[in-house]
Image (cartoon, rainbow, N blue to C red; front, side, top):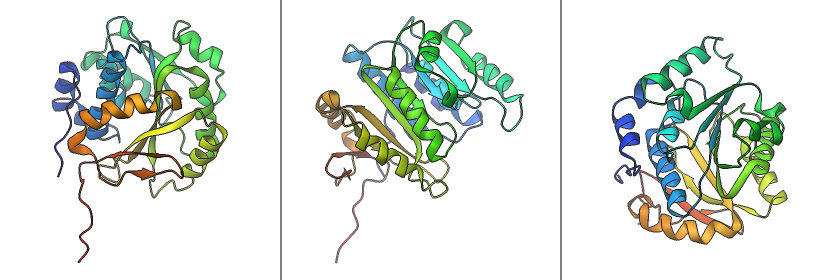
Length: 253
């Protein structure tokens, strides 16, 4: 097994080691560490600004992302906050406070991202475009298509879109929405796949602007060299990295 990557942020590491598993949620620690390190990579590349999570739930993944931000940057947590009950919003707020994300570092948005215009979302972000958007909203083709359109319209130069629960056996049609989106948006390409940790902590796709692909990929090859699955992912014709805790190849005898 490959070692778990470091996030590159002491505050993120502290939360991942003592807090992440205590917050109810379904995203993997492996993916959280990688995404936090991607945020640091953006900072190193001069990409700054707010971030957003569509489907913040009780805050598990959101808190990790927020800890990876630079001073003055804010995180937007978007959710209908109705499932499994309306008190989920209170639990989100309480978890953020408990694990160090003060109110001035975040904006809680109770609403349906699918019904939100880019102008409305950007208004919550002080008029700034978003450098990182984690999409974990309603798991249907139609909803994902709307979330992708919103994310694309609000994405800053050098921004990243991360899609949760890809290739999940419970949501097999989500990949159809992604393929349709990639064909309609040739300026966006898969940067890497973050492999599943468990069936609950499922696969994520990381998307970037085509003009940034080679720059980001060169950095990822060095940063995550111990987590790279050798064969990569073939998106026909685009190829990208696969980051995994299990980098073995099948033995052919």
